[in-house]
Image (cartoon, rainbow, N blue to C red; front, side, top):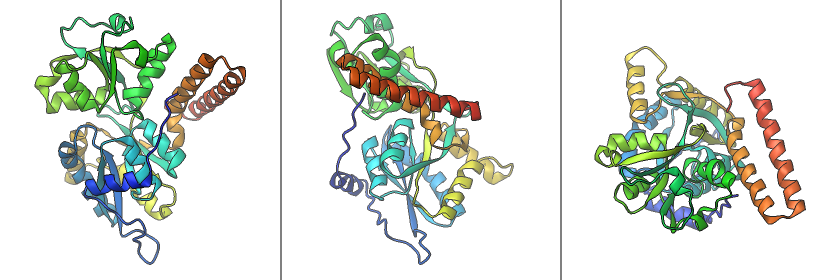
Length: 338
């Protein structure tokens, strides 16, 4: 299991200052509603490219909910979770694993889920290599410590958890002992590193490759995919539970109706979504994250089995069986649930 060592509040405060965003969480109106909302966004590519994509949506949200919404960009998932935990942000766009961290550690709740342009609420993890390198999946899994490999952020669903849970762990492979070097970086950095021969292979995801093809087509043409994961839950919109219920409902309605109309305004909203590579948003709650809980439980069980400790194995097996049962029950209620 990937263990997450979250940084302290001081580091988060420094990150906020560096981002030019230092919200004061206790700024509220007399009715308890905040004067402004801070929306956290992972700069998976870079802030300069992400800010213009998100700002129109945040402007539309400000207008609809009647409260100014400003962004907080961070370059890693830990900062996003900690910022919500310490009430520096009230709402954010989270990929699946950090969304679960926000639910577990930062008093967050899932308000909705992203769907792509085709209406699919999933995406996939991939492993990329330089085109023409001759590196195949079989060669990658030889584990002869000759290749330099890149993972994503330690809390990245597609960059770290999924490749471990679906590829390496089932084969009894520990990346740290399989490759010559293992580095963690953003999806964008991994694309550039593989294309330029700095890394022999690296993780990424199908959405990241879409952005790469659009923003850096010359670089994107230099890579190819050698492994693709099963479907993963798409990103979620997460809010703090203690946000005013009426305001949470306004925010929920904003996302669920965004780009769904038939007038000129809706056309403009769909253009905003298109640039984000999204088709819109659908209802979701915390059960939407059950596939992540299953992967984490499977990793825990694998670690327990490696320890050969009977008590640890029994506890991990019970936890795994429990989340599997919960997932099955959720799918019985909603067959579209992953």
